[in-house]
Length: 501
Ligand code: NAD
View 1 (cartoon, rainbow, N blue to C red):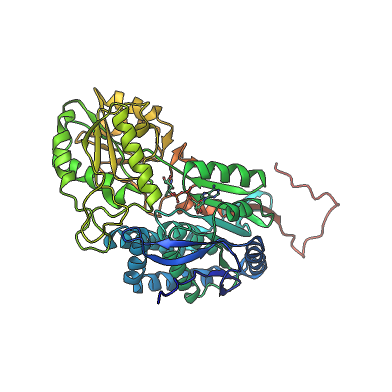
View 2: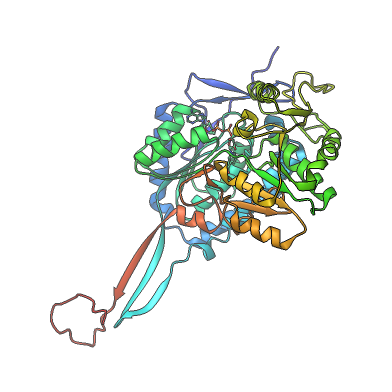
């Protein structure tokens, strides 16, 4: 007898409910093809019900004392820590990344929850005393109302935690639409959020794909939308939700270049590159997927290939695995198609990771570490985001040439420079047109004291996730100019215009 896969529930008005939808999709373990669960594509009525619950809850949540809000996130961070092992195993099974990497995924989200617990210090207005005689001006950072978040498959813990904790801590209510490919760990995090004390209606979850996302973009009662995912979908979400009058932020696709100068520490730089290119099977928006070797460093390709060959390709659940499967059969076929295009377009395939032998996981979506040398702009493997364990190598004569190459690429998510020269590092950070820069740090994702600041084609909207910027994103600044009359003083006349003299 086959046991039916569990059905993933939605969260509407504090209740975990099963969708009435007739459209369900399997959540699949990418290493085994086992069906772990089924996820619904919510009906329009269910989206409306979630938004109505969030709208109603906003009436009281917006006035909840800041200390009460902060204490929920203090409790929440504790619950996430206590359940770290379970969360990482759920995540690894549905997403494919190794268990240590899955713990990292949860941990980077946990850091944002810790930051949300400090909301008392973050959501402060400004005050100027005596801007005119007896007049003060001050600002309030007020929540917007119902906000929504749409998340990708590659960080199913971290990215939902980029969104709803800061939105809710600032006094908003929230609709979360997780990735339909791996919603299970997200739902466990949502359960823990309720256990931490988030009141009913303040956090709601609907599942689905294009139709649910479009309903969120169009809904008149949703005030702001935060999106993380591909450039294709993010551009659509930005245009559609902006047209509907919403505040929107979209973090999107990337092509992150790492530049290695010949004076770099060779061993450390190549080790960092191998981890940053192939870790998480290359499915990181900040993966160092493009290597630019400068001058004598152009001779280092064989050493890099030798290191990449030592990586173990297997299921994320197997101890010692370095590279797990990609998320789906379709993703594997797309990555393999791009590798084939690289060969056809004349790049040199110096390490071919296609069809690796993975004992015990013959059905998994595996692609091993793959390296192309002799890559140039105009080849699809350079122009497109591959989002798999494929590193493309370009060459440059000088640091200036490398900077020109990177600045000519439309994407601006992340970049890194490996060097021992402070002067070269300073020139790079000054002249490079990319939002997040690492100096001898291959994946420079900022901690939540700062904001995530991808730029150019990798981002739409002015303000990024977490850090100070997201407090501005999730609040409206109201500026009050106030004068109080002393009851003991008799008024003279009716002119209430403030004199600025
Ligand atoms: P995706 O764009 O396919 O999906 C993201 C979300 O959009 C999902 O919730 C999905 O259900 C929804 N969606 C999919 N197709 C849609 C459509 N036609 N209309 C409306 N909504 C739709 O992205 P993905 O494959 O899940 O994630 C990988 C991508 O995300 C990569 O491009 C990666 O670079 C990017 N990413 C960017 C960042 C960043 O911070 N810049 C972080 C993580 C991932």
